[in-house]
Image: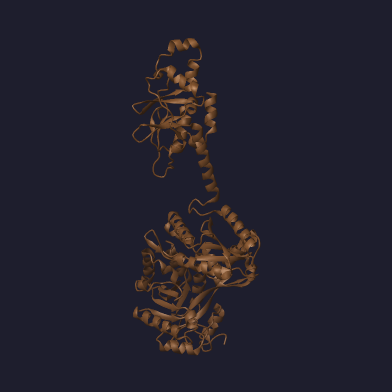
Length: 606
């Protein structure tokens, strides 16, 4: 018994099972998802004998072949037992036993219940069966049959266990070096590959690019569609990225929605730019998830060897810094490391804490920019824009703190703080009586089921009339116009709230769905207005947007109007409203109120 336990202890616990299968039963195990391995590589076609064979004849076979351990007993091509060398030799070790029992057949001395398995049996299951059977049968081995239950050979337990050990080692190696979800190299193998790439670059004088790739707003997909959809997205992204790479390049998953890419044997940064352009183009193809076409973008940070760093850790650090620069630039972009990025390296560790504190202490305040009717010059309303003056850092750009607020789950508090302050301030301004108040609203918050309730509560607290409130939403909300989102926006319109698409023209709103969107206003992005007087092509685009918007019964606002020529041309094209430095700069509440009281005659800051 002690020997049997010792054998069981030597086999991994995962390979053991209760003795629920009687000895002699043919095992046909495995199924979908199980690891199947043919036993052919460890099965020997040994000489067999019939059960009617005399015991002395079988004994002679053992005595003439010292390597023979067992002899299979087969009747009509079907195995019926095993004759063990140990049992037969010990039985006839004394001469008188040969005289008494030698004329008997081997059926009296064989094990009639050997382990019999099919040729396609899973080796993990077989190992469990052998441990359950006991020490003697582990020493004797097992019989193997084909699909018709005919004798196919005899298996060696030691060879089997060696195969199991080999497979376990291979499995452990894969677990240690590859990501289980995507099958890509993991953090450990990534560093090995990067070290090899740098070593090769040193020898042949080439360059290596290390890119950090972060999926934009991945958390919102997990929150909206669930973790299974998020996992599916990561698998699709991994396949797409891998599909556009060259053979020597390495794509790895570092965890979460973070990937790294090692581009080898480059002649210069232009090679990296070309590779990243192909990667981003492939990435942005819509991905079907839960019945919706989801468009994915990524922020990418790149560091070059040897230009930026010579060692792995420094190259990784600078690629990470470049990644944060891409996020601060508004995401969906790639940034190469620049020495000026280093000044922001510590920001990622403390900025979130500072932002939380700023919201608690009311450091983030709205400023107000007037919006005028193009034809008459009449004041229509004002847009409230969030501004943060950090006590130590000074002014922090919205392009920095708004994406940060989205990442760390503070965007709802930020939007509510701006609406609460702006609503109260505008209510106290005589010059804004009956005028429109526009506030920016995060697409992430609109996806929240609690959005409408929280918005209405904040508006009521601030004393903002719903028919004077306009929500400005970026185009990205409409990349995947899900029905529940559209219904939510339509419900707000039914309450009198106006919906505007902000920065129209720089996103990817499909003209095919534009007519179905529950919106009232299109705001042409300032990047078009700044150059349309000099570039006939941009001029044609601006005029087309105005005409298209009017055909859809939408109000058109031009942002970033800075010259009289721009304003006059927009009026001639029938643009409805104008907003920009020519007409009024963003001002704090007190200055904006004073400007209103002065009759809005002289544009502030002029």
